[in-house]
Amino acid sequence: MRFFVDTAEIDAIRELHELGMVDGVTTNPSLIKKSGRDILEVTKEICDLVEGPVSAEVVALKAEDMIAEGRKLAEIAENIAVKVPLTWDGLKACKVLTGEGKMVNVTLCFSANQALLAAKAGATFISPFIGRLDDLNVDGLDLIADIREIYDNYGFETNILAASIRSANHMSECAKIGADVATAPPNVIKAMANHVLTDKGLDAFVKDAADAGIKIV
Ligand code: E4P
Image (cartoon, rainbow, N blue to C red; front, side, top):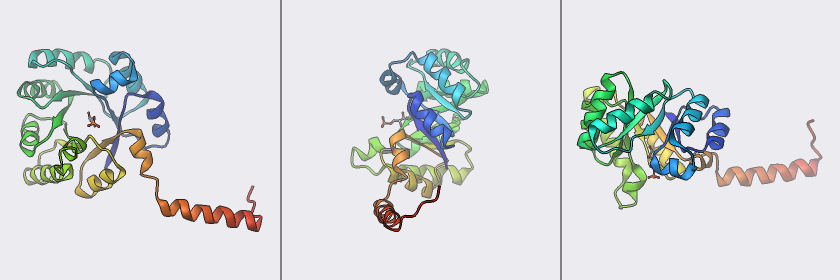
């Protein structure tokens, strides 16, 4: 499973990238707002740092305006994936932009039917939102499994990009289901390293090393 980082914070992307944990980046208007940066500037900086797909989201609602914005975003770098919402207009924009050879990430997906339409429109990525479904007491992971089954039934090549990930558990569950990609905030990716027994075991080893006077360098 590829890891995308769900942030527009350059320092956080750089830290994970140096460890080889970044296969791509996703942003959205809320993350751009949080960064306090200009969308074109910060997106260019991310694209200069990361080789993999960098999703940059349109803000228009009509297909023709989304297409114009998508073309402008795609000029930033070759690894831009234009992000469009899963609306009828978004699907139209997806069809046109993928026809021009651009990567398109169809976002705000909350049902298997929406994912089916995105695949038919040629989306490179479909972004089902797990956490926002969980917030409504609907199991978001079930949606990932449903989309996996449907795409596999028909050989759709659209990549399942599990999004709105809130916990380390979401990451391993997505990997078990077979999501192609999961995008998560930096703190969730770092939290995947944590285990209470690791901490407990390390405390004991540190104490015993000190008691035994073990020195290596
Ligand atoms: C990424 O593509 C999505 O925009 C993001 O994962 C949404 O996450 P949220 O539901 O935590 O805002």
